[in-house]
Image (tube, rainbow, N blue to C red; front, side, top):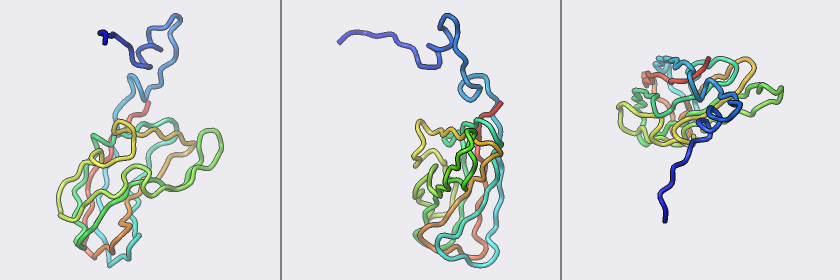
Length: 161
């Protein structure tokens, strides 16, 4: 084995001659917060969901490892999925809804604070979405009913410019 000194893809692009464009979601973008509060009104069967908010259109990098929520879904054996509703991509194609595209089966059986980056399918705790008009982010209880009064309060951090 030998000692190596290498560059990330983004740094390679920055230091190329001429420099290549680096997306603001990778360098010098601004971190924004999408805050949400939900108190379940009435009981909801398994696969009930909550639209948490809508991220803006364009290229957006979700920072799931910085995103957290207090979850008190009072029905036992609960898991939370985090995903998105169907949206129009920047190239005009339709991207299908994916209820667990960001987090699949986060164990929220016990009330408390949870990091969306703990159990995520997103690379490096992040996920890039490129849409024309924004995307609704949705939390779903796939396996158990939601009891009235169940709480979901938190925020999703994202980079945009």
